[in-house]
Structures are given as C-alpha cells and as structure tokens.
Length: 429
Image (cartoon, rainbow, N blue to C red):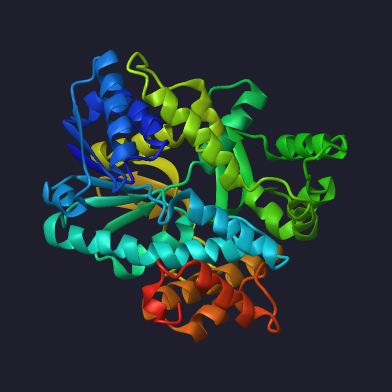
C-alpha cells in the first residue's frame, strides 16, 4: 500500500505517522509520501517521521516532495488531505475578520469558515482532478476543514471515492469511556448531524444503554461549573435536546457570550497555534527526537492518527466496522436530502463507507442542520462560480453571518483580505 499526504508539512503529521506505524503490518504499507509547498517545514517533518519509523521498527518508507502531481502519479491507494490554504496567517485573518465586524471569529464556522472554504474548495477539487487522471482507484480521505463543506464539494464534483474524517467523534467516545472506566471499543455512540454541527443522541456500553446516565452527569457538571473564564452551555440545554451537543455548537447556542469574550482582546486561536507550531517544529528538528512529543497534544486533533489509521484499515481489510465519518446521506437521516453529505455512523468495508439508518433529527436540531446545509451548498456554488451574489447569499444564509445591512461591506472586506487566494471573483477581489 502507498499513501500520499497532501499538507504533509503539517505539525499534525507525526500524529498520523504514529497511527500508521501501529497498523503498517495489517495494511501492507510500503510508502508514505508527504507533499507540501513549504520545503523548509517539509524537510523537518519528513526527517522526524523517518526517525519515528526507524525507532519503532517500521518497514515502510517515508519520503517527500513539493510536486503534488508527481506524488499522485505514483498511483497511491489513499490520498489524505490535511492542508491549510494560506497557512495560519490566513486563519488569523479569518478570525480577525469576524471580530472586526462584531461576528464570531472562528476557522470552521461563521465568516471565518466561509473564507477558508472559498480558498480551499478549488484546491481540493484540483487534487481530485489529478486523482481522476493518475490514480482513479484511490480513495481521498479528507481531514481539511471546514470538513463538511470540503467533503460536500468532493462528493458532488470530485469523481473519485471520497470520505470526510473528523477526530471529534473519537474524542467524545474516549471521553465517555474514561468517565465510565471502560475500554473505548466498548463505547458506541450515535453522533448525527453535519460536521462540527452534530449531537450524540444515544450511548451504549456493550448492550447497556447509558444515555440517560451520561446526560444526567453532564447536566450536573454544568450546573455546578464555576464562574471561570470558560463559557458553558446551560445545563437545561442538554435536557431540552436530550443529547450531547458538539462543542462547536457553542458558537450557535452561546453566540453573544463568545463574541463578547473575543471582543475582550484574547489571542486568536491562530496566534496560539502559531506559537505551539513554532515550539513543535523546534522539537521535530532535534535529531535525537524519535517519538511524538507531549507538546503535540496542545496542537489539537487528538486521536486523529487513531481515527485515520482505523478507517484505512476498515477500507482495506473490509471488516465492516462502524466509523463516524462524512459521506452522502442516502436516507440515513430521512429528514435531510439523500444527496447531501452528513456526519453519521457508517459501515465501512472495501466498497467504502455506507451511512447507517437513523431516526430523523428532532425539530430543534433539524432546523439548524437544514439551514447550515443550505449555507454549505451556496458556499460551494460561490467558490466554483466566482459569483458575488452567491457568496453574499451564503453569508445571509449562515446564522452566524452578517445581516442584510452589513453583508456587502463584510463580503468586500473578506475579498480585500483574500485577494491572492480568490482569483475566481475577478480583479476587484
């Protein structure tokens, strides 16, 4: 097996390599090629990855290139995408765009996620076009945010098999397992909705339904939470939902509180991550370092390696395991269209990931999910067409976007900040 990683100079990469080392024998893994235009970072990350493999007795080769097309021409079995168009500087700009207009500043939701999607969708589809020509039988596994929009674009326009991956479900599963003092593989969660917009409705340990117990525990903890700097959803919200909401739903449920905190002048997440990445790259450059350092946990993306390696194993070995991933709905959530991408438990084997059937979303969930899905579809149309009208329609459709009186001003500011990255919108961009 050969795997190509687009965005291979990411500080996430050692996390991925660690997971692949664990499963290399099962996969028959022979080569992992890291692809990135940042040659300085790529050199550091590649050398560290090679040391990790050698230290663990791995039998696959890690190499690297800045030539994406050449890497795909090597006929890989899987192409993993974990890229960030514009880097952390663009992320910081996205977050500040929200703050400057009194909106949520975040990289996957609201105005920031919109800007990132416009930059990212054309690049992802260029990768898919290269795959159609040179590696038509390969599967693209997308970890790039905003993962829901990116995977939706792939499902509609890629012409190759694509699955969207997020580590949040596995992180939640691990957290519940720790709370119950059981093994993670004993915990089964029904997490449904869209990427970064989902709810855990049912939780089983073996054959025992522990949903009520976990919900009651969560409500008790929220009710007794101290008045610190963290923003907590009200305990009553979990009772209303009868589900555990994704932490990303805080941006929708606690919008005013989060905007006020951001307006207080706290550092952006991009600023925090830039400092973490600087320290990580210094550690990776240490020729004596052969194992992923503990500082990697500060970067985020916990269990990414576990999720990615396990998904590839199921696709390769056909074990019919259940994974929570992003795929076409195809009736899984009957109150959403069949052709849209959802994030739900799926049965995974050599034929791909098939969404399992689930009950409809409750109205309090469905309304938000349907609105965000409409926003996602408009965003993809805007990214591919270069239509200013479609772009502003997408912003108006997003509940975290600007109102009609401000949408044109916000849109033009976004274009000004992303001139280099959005040529599809013409010379005024």
